Structure formats: structure tokens, C-alpha cells
Amino acid sequence: PGVPRLADRAVIYHPSFDGSAVIDELARQLGEKLGPPGGNSGLETSSPCRWPSPRLTEWLLSRGEKEEVLRGMIVISSDLVKRGLTQHLSQVAATLTKMQNG
Image (cartoon, rainbow, N blue to C red; front, side, top):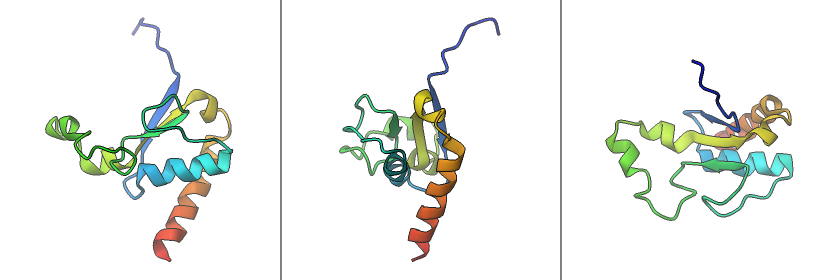
């Protein structure tokens, strides 16, 4: 309380989806280009599928973070949040569910 905050991104996760798949599909829907992992992009994830080092999240796991959270966590810039994020995320979820179910 009383400390100003900078709300420049949203951090969310879904236990059923890999964050890399989510940001790939979200970028496609928004017409955004994903940069390299850790670059200055409006979309990022902690999913091990996105990063070249499988040991990247070991320190978080050792602190008790759950693998499903790290796999599904995505970071979205506030600029992209303002572009109808809820609707786009619903479409991403429908697309990924359809892909998972064949």
C-alpha cells in the first residue's frame, strides 16, 4: 500500500497448455512476431520448450514452484493486453484444445 506500481505486463498460466504453444498461437492471431527467447518481445513464457537450456527453471523448482506453472506461464505486455486479450486467449484455448484432441 502506498507504493506506486508499474503495470506493464500481465503474467498468467493455464495448467492444460504449454506456454510456448500459447504465445506462438497468440502471436499468430495478433499479427505479432516472436523474437528470440528473452528478447524484447511483448510475449514470453517460462516453458522449457521455448528456452535452449533445460536447466533454466531449476532454481524456481528448487524454491517449490510447480512444473505445470512454469510450463504454462506466459508474460504479455500491457500493449497487447489492451488489444482484446480475453477474446484472443479464448480463441487460443479453443485452437490448442482442438489440436490436442486431434
